[in-house]
Amino acid sequence: MKINTNEMHRIASEINALAVDYQALISDMYSRFSNMPSETHEWTGNQAKKFVGYVLLDKSDLMSVGDKIKGFSKIIKDDATLVEGRVSKIWKDESNG
Image (cartoon, rainbow, N blue to C red; front, side):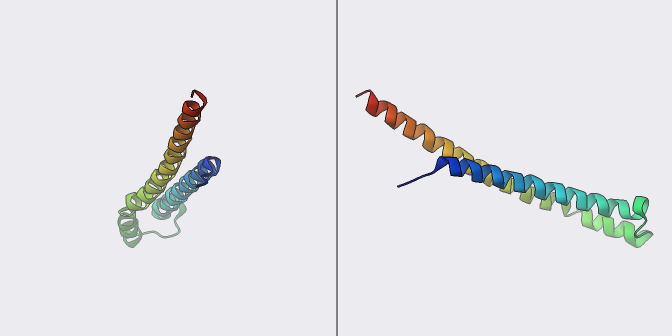
């Protein structure tokens, strides 16, 4: 069995970076929604305020998707580290006799 732990670490970092980017985009999108009625005036009035109120209810769910993706990234990284540790121990034990 071949396991490339360097590749696992690289992929884990890439996945984590994508999750961070995803959360930044979600945050920016919700900031834009929130600013519509009061700052940008792209949409004003009671309907705009109601829309923003309803839309904001979903923000935490969407942000948690990013957290879950980060969790998967951590699992990959931790597994790579675990494999490295076990292989290192095996090599150490074999070299000691």
